[in-house]
Amino acid sequence: MKLIQSRDNAFFKQLKKLAESGRERRKAGQTLLDGVHLVQSFEAAFGRLETLVVAESALAGGEVADYVAGRETVILADALMRDLGLVDTPSGLLAVAPMPDASQSLHLDQDAILLDGVQDPGNLGTLLRTAAAAGIRQALLSPACAAAWSPKVLRAGQGAHFALSIHEDVDLPAVMAEYKGTTAVTCLDGATSLFDARWSGPVAWVFGAEGLGVRRELIEAATLRIRIPMPGSVESLNVAAAAAVCLFEAVRRRLA
Amino acid sequence: MKLIQSRDNAFFKQLKKLAESGRERRKAGQTLLDGVHLVQSFEAAFGRLETLVVAESALAGGEVADYVAGRETVILADALMRDLGLVDTPSGLLAVAPMPDASQSLHLDQDAILLDGVQDPGNLGTLLRTAAAAGIRQALLSPACAAAWSPKVLRAGQGAHFALSIHEDVDLPAVMAEYKGTTAVTCLDGATSLFDARWSGPVAWVFGAEGLGVRRELIEAATLRIRIPMPGSVESLNVAAAAAVCLFEAVRRRLA
Image (cartoon, rainbow over all chains, first blue to last red):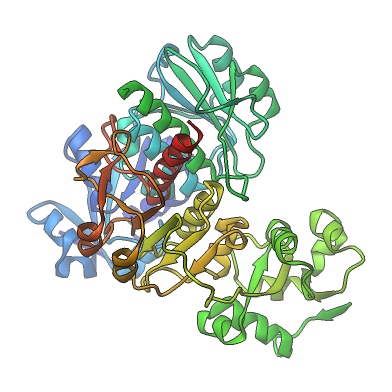
């Protein structure tokens, strides 16, 4: 047990870099996990983590204190934990975790979600979580997406990161051209209702940025253009909600 | 046209109160709309607003400048607009808008969403948006929910507020007891798969807080307990994603 109280401490400075910079995370091959649920999900998937970091006040009792009981921890003064500015409401538990190797191979004959310029961390994390819950195992992100392994995206993903193979900075048009299955895009002027559309075999589901939507180039490259019927007077859905509707319609059909 | 540069200006102080306090909004019967899309949605539904407030720099050109061209505006120095701290990325256009009368009658024989303790403004707004897109016209919120007419919830709702009758501080157990139709709740240990569940007539869909879920009392009061089948290794969905899956399964059935 070691209590860190100074902003000049080398380990704290390293945490700060990992919290703030995608470049630092890539360089170190590491990211930060915030909260018991994320740390637990990671450890369940990949085994025990070495470095657990706890806010001083979280040791007094509760979920975090229970989780770290009997384990090697580094203790951060509360002010320093807040200083990291990781998420809006820090849980009091952090872990330094290795990021999975991004060079893992891509399967062009398996289901995937392709995300085009999704910049909001909450939306991106929710999309990954929804895909993982629907049984999808690959996520391909265009260069304009938010950094998948940033603390805010990890928080919104709720462990989905460890169930997916996540590929960043992907040339989506190139992948779509090579994909061995249906490439499906949702757009407001889609030709076919989601509920009438027919597909079989693997599907690459393409979702775009809030507001801008999917790039025209990708819409034109898709082999299936669908719209979600919206009987209400509001004709738009948040991108993560739209994805939930599509991916669970696919779940429904697989189960039927 | 009038340029406000001082924090002591009475109109600015009133804006600040509306931005920060639900009590002030209720007292005034007014709220603040941020952005062209929201203002446009309001004006399309209820007619022209009197007071448009524009950030000085937004007048130089672009969407906001186009929208306010030829209209009466109050101009705020950029620093003051930022000071309001309304949303993370202020658009440069604000409007003071009347909040609809909350005493409007409740229809216990029509579809509704019932939200139990949804505190995250983004989730709450997305839930309202999804419900409105699915053709639902009533939203009933428990006292523990975030304030529906706060600027962040309005932003996430993207105009859904103007398509819904929104009832706050509702005694949900009492409403469920009186409801003339199916009261459906999703829970992880729900008895029936969403895709196998049967219902007819109006449905009151109950969704709960992230993490905590729906209160036990409401789960027990519901006439239908369903689970969303999740074939993936992550067994949870964001509440707004779960609602999207349920509400659009109902849309699919209505269209079938």
